[in-house]
Image (cartoon, rainbow, N blue to C red):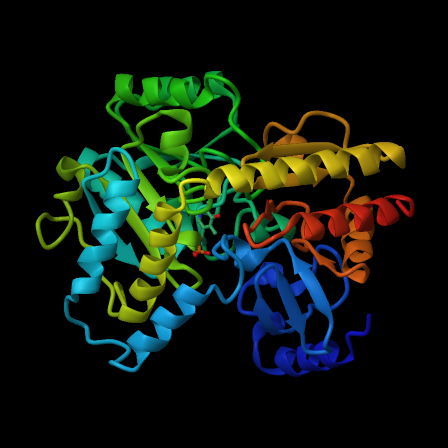
Length: 428
Ligand SMILES: *Cc1c(COP(=O)(O)O)cnc(C)c1O
């Protein structure tokens, strides 16, 4: 495959955009080479500016759970756009998507829409602090909750890919209110509570971590967090930006049967347009302005194009009772195929998977937290990534990302992917 035009476009982009990209992980820094510029996409495939066709395992980092250019979403956006793209007033559409989301997700009464997952998590934390009148939060190393200041303390995703877990520009004052814990280590969390009695407003967690590769919660871990929160008057925030409307209709709360106090959404909920949301029961949501004292706002929040896209996406997922089962089955099939190929080539690896989130780590030890995720052999990952790219298979350009499986993938696509992995495995 040739990437002449992509390389040229990247050189032009670098002149006017920092690093040539509007979000760091797109830059291929972790794997080397220059990023591919995408021209269009349909179903499970993306087509780049050089005319190459790739099977896509990034899917815009999650939103395209039903495939690219999913027609009901595209048509809804086109129809809405003709009627005006933003009014800055309430619209009936906002109530419609809010009601649908509230009906799909357990344990929430009200939902507020914002423009990104970052905003959703940032607002969830402010709400938790406002409700509890406490300052500190607990976050887990390797979990990513967007790029707002409180969360850029050993964050996952691009923030680890670039080795700047503690970003300059985040003040000491902010950092001191973020307590860091180890994923899957309840004792560590209990110790933090003991050392910060009556000071912790919230625990925020990815209920299945997806920003240090995929790291599922150990048996009893989420239940233990729920219990610690209850004992300490602390709110439990599930960051379901990745897991929401992906692992189940009601997300991780439904899958694990655990109630979170506040839930953050993004990615799938916008159907590919910039949308985030946060939700909770009435007693918490009523703290928000204009009902309560906790301020939160947005000129383009609840934007009609974004709401139209999100509504069609949620409707499709709500009406198709088998979609999450199909996603699970396809991803399990892929996992089995990858294992067979890597075993056949004597490659040392660990695969983590939960539902349609999966990642391959090139290390034999179990990957259960940020430290074990960071043990993976990055040189092997680079070869794996570029080998797959040559084969026309596009996975995330970093070992710290999960693969996102779309229902648009056919078993033929999966077989082609597995065969490609087999050929690449021989070169590792
Ligand atoms: C992607 C992601 C975010 C940030 O969402 P943006 O829309 O990129 O701001 C937050 N939390 C999790 C778990 C994510 O995966």
